[in-house]
Length: 182
Image (tube, rainbow, N blue to C red; front, side, top):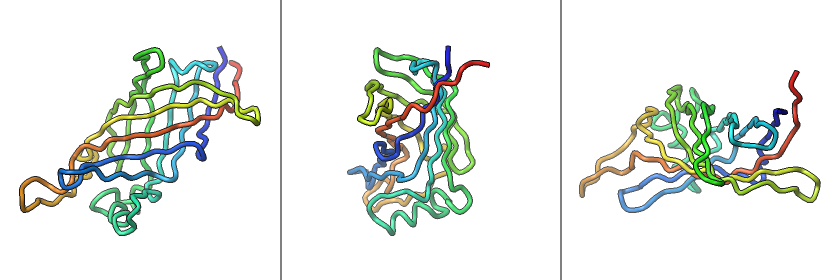
């Protein structure tokens, strides 16, 4: 079988997150700069190998003072840890168009295993002849597992920020090349 390389189509992709704020609502944000490279057997994603890198300085919550705070030592420490990295360790089919993607996630120099869910929407050829693959990504992590523990107690009880981060994304990949075995 031929190995196929896929690259991110950044114009048609997004990567976001949500965190509980004041224990009553979620605050959403996204990363404007990230990259994903995938290697498959032919066009089959059943054994895909995935590498992703996020530029943490590109964080955007639609509130510049909050974004600046997220970049400092209370949260991501982007001066020391400018990137978040993910490298898959395995993928398993969970349904006709759903996969469980397992891998190592590194945030602030701390690497932990995570499980993400991928919903494969299929393949399509765009008007310029490019083959595209579409996925919806979801998952959850605990921010404290990665050394992001900033919080503040509230007068009424509870804390300002939840520990669970919900990850969501719409990912479009572009088929690059089929590499023939040597």
